[in-house]
Image (tube, rainbow, N blue to C red):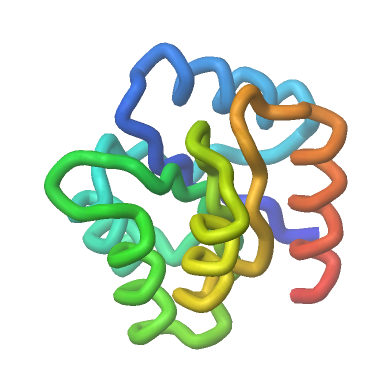
Length: 122
């Protein structure tokens, strides 16, 4: 199973926690981006198998970054992550091209299941 994950999160503490959790579950962290603009550049360079994309970020909103990544790679697997969960935000992320939406605080077993399900479709 391929398992390179790009973490896009503007909180260093949160990105470190997610990175630790992923490696503990035998996933490989391809890279960490602190904003949507860096996420698009890193996706292009690293070609990860999956992206965990925070929605509310500086420089480029997560929804816009999802759209850009999906425009360059229609097969990109992206999980949107948001602390400001609402049906409207969920729908916006899915319409932009996210395969799933996970709310913060992150339910680790749910996130792992979601990642595994998406990676099995490769």
